[in-house]
Image (tube, rainbow, N blue to C red; front, side, top):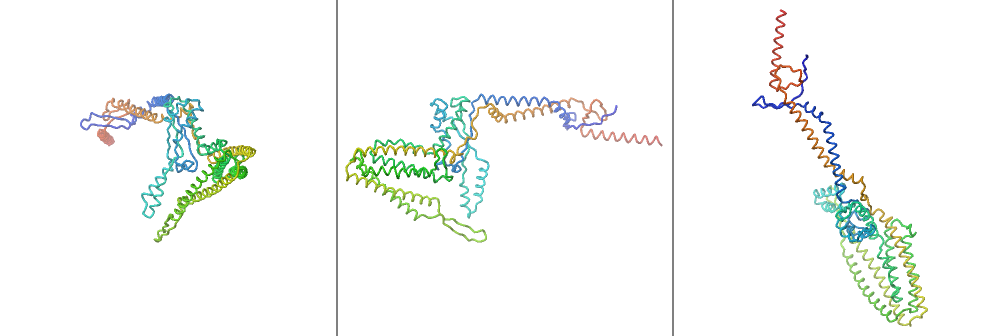
Length: 527
């Protein structure tokens, strides 16, 4: 039978003190055992992965893990951490009891849960990588800044990042709700906050309420005219500010008016209706109580004079500040070739703010002086004439009632137009619910999968290590149960020959000597 010359790669660990203590590890034997246990490993790995995922899914659906949603803000100023009114923005305003109460009312839930829900809401945000890289770069520039560019580097270092996206977390289990009601409530709360946002930063609702709810009939006729005059001034100022901020010449689809249209309408009511009633009252001395009205005029004149003195002092202080204000100095350095340096003075934001204050105070002071003259003429006319007839009183009351309806209509048009503008133009994308909370099975499975990935990886790695260890140990046992093969002996029943390095050298030398002897014998026979 032909000798099998195939040899397998073996690793022999030999004890030098005792040649008989040997541990033989065959790589081929390990590979054979890996192949042998491959199917078992795959089955066990699949079963373990499914069991781990199932456990995570059961835990997700049974445990009351907080519901989550993602919201964003994209209006001018949020990048500086400010709200639309220029104040510090706080996402915690979503916990406002008014917002929670409105959401509870829409859900038909007990309002006693307001405090439990407030304590169950939390917020989180993450700085985007590009913003983080930018801030890191600014710090690097600051570290390397030279004395000549220190101020510029410091300005960059002062740059801060303010988040624009927030994760809203609602621990509905803590609030005493189940998953379905908890998710529904969170989504309702997010919508109610959007309504609160537009009401808070959009149309000035208290303005309209104050104008429309003024119980003018309890006052004398001259005082009624003053109430409407103040209301119309307030509405006109509000409309003029909106028209100034509006760069799109917005025309409301709800009312068909622009802010300038409504401002002109306000001016018309003031200049025609209100002034006509006011002059009629003054000329005909229409009053409910002459003495009371004269006392009112005197009181108003004295107050206006004090206001005039206050505004005059304030104007003088602002003008003095402007005159003594030191403008900012900007240093322009050379390009490195020369040591030339240029300086230039520029206006700062504080300097511009002083001029705005000056203009505002001048306007108020002028208006105050006009009011003093107006009330003085009223007082003098009433003192020198008798009270009016009943017919004149009836006419004034009818005219004021008609004026009240026009003012109320103006306020309603202003409210609708402003709300339309803020919701569809100014704040069209100011507040967005990017990812609402969900209670769907698919979302639950997705959450279970994401939460179980790490566990599955650890379990699968552990099973793989056990798989390798089992193959290694099986190979070790099978190889070391075999008897060592003597030098020169043939064993056709076993393909492996386990020898160490010294025995291999001895075998080669013996075979070489045998071959040499056989060659010499053949030569002698030929001779």
